[in-house]
Image (tube, rainbow, N blue to C red):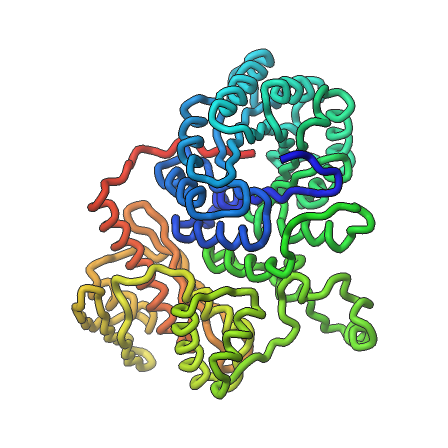
Length: 525
């Protein structure tokens, strides 16, 4: 891909660096859903994972490479032949592919992590790029911890990998240490001192440890970078990565200043953000720029007055431009299928006929329970229909008996995909505890609940409640969630989602036998 002076490529690493964020791991189906959403969003490159990290990572990268068209699909590898060969095999079916190799260059990494001299670093970097070129023409190289590397040595490494055949060189602020002025000077130094740098694309990859990932990325762009590596909602290791929605909207809103464009369909930002939050269970802070609930809310009287006169008094961008609907109240129980389909589309979701029918039936059932339906209600129904572990168990009914000062009784009736109906009665300290004990005893699968959360999806006394459960079994962590106007029912279905994942995983292991060797050390740029 030839460099273009007015175009900034968006390199999304949500599925790789983003997934390394604690609590943000994704299953293969979830990665595929996210990758398809990123393709619809219009990102240029999707870094699908680190294939050598585990068999599961390899399979996820391979599935994205096979099934997602449009963006370039990238796989990360250390400058080691085995890593690069695994990445190449995982990417072999991609319509457009890129191998991304990395090696640390800073003095602290050379001494304490790699135990390598400068000369060995240069040799390994060149060797890694040349090996990758055996499998692919599109090669990206990253000098890990570049922002803490001596400028003369960084220039030496960059020049060497360009000569070896790298078409993109990425400059990572791996630990979020740099500041804008310093980082801008780093890029200007490289452009002055590296031969051949005008023939490749310079990229930037910033972490947010000091809260400056977006600012540093924009400074790098102003200094000549033409690719930004970022993640949806800014997820990533430690404090996270440069937030895709923030950096894209900064370039779009301040286009007259930057005089640069991206290929991102900005009206897909909000639904893509919501999808990731649903998959990972990492809620979006209300005051999050661009996609938070408060991003376009105005409570101050003077602000409201200005908004009524002219929206631009207090809004530098329109909510519609990021895919956020202005209206909150949407539909009711008398609304028809056509109106429902139209509203789902306005919210940024695409459903096939079968999915639409299923969600519409759930919508009608919910409309009978609620006086008012909000956008959040529709989003919750769609996201639940698109995701979650389907079967083998489903909740048929839940009956509770509770009196003050006594234990609560819960009777569950479950149906298995094989046709079995199982009923069980259990007692607990409260309705959730009793429900969980009944479900565990009925399914024969016990877990250790580590965290339990309930929050309202929308507003009002009849708002839907979302229950999110984090649990462990056999040293493996799981997350389940469900939405209902009955929070006890939502809690039970959230646990059942975890149990379904556990049973499906056990069946998968029994069928194929999973490689249980420890995963290779993950890469961190």
